[in-house]
Length: 368
Image: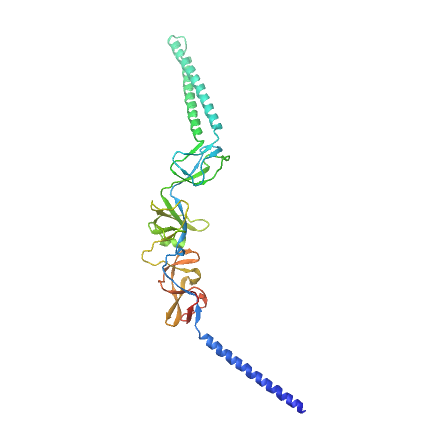
């Protein structure tokens, strides 16, 4: 009995110690939670500036103002193509030829028709002159003279028609060659030797080397801030420090059916150092207003209003506040340009924007 009493007392003491430990742990956890809640949360933020970086630009290409698709004016088989992409040509150079056999056969047939018509016309003229003489001597009737005159008129018409067909056949024989209408460079080829082409089918594309321009594509949202004559600067991707001035000369009225963007044409100076087809980047020239951009994930959309979280720092203390902004609609590489609402030097939160509240204390930025 005494042993049972001792065992019960030991169990009671163990349970009391366990309760005390659990209570101490709970009190410690609450204290730790209070301490943690009072610590400012770190933020992922950046300082916006007006640095002229490639991400503030849009890609494009160098193209010619004048592009001509050249083809044959008649059906035939291509026997030779004398140029390739990049070939420099002069006005009048023969670029491609068709098989001339069929065309030359048409020329020979037309020549034979001309000769036969000439013989018929000479015979009809002699008959008409003889009939006139007979009528004067009252040997032939007036009806015979009228018949001879009609035959002469028909022979003369047949002669004119045969000569016209010969001229047409000679012209068609000339269509067996494609000649360069102006100096330029071959920018595309569509047909190889041996192919059969129809009249007007594009065979070669010729681009003028003078009057190069840069072309870029902009979304509809960015077009409200773009107009004819706006200054731009253009540079090659591998030479970001060598920039050429340009101006908007044309905004195509129809959007691309796939990308829903519209093409913008930028005129370059005549002494621009770009090559046809080169890849470039372009950005509008600043007219005093800074060119700022933010990652798309930093933009908060609430009830149709675009907003960002701004970090206000006062010594060691920092809080966040929300601010309305206006984007330009011009996006590039995951960034979007800011048209209004920000100034260079503003600190903007770019991650975790859905878990902040106005006036919330924050710590240092976790981004370098």
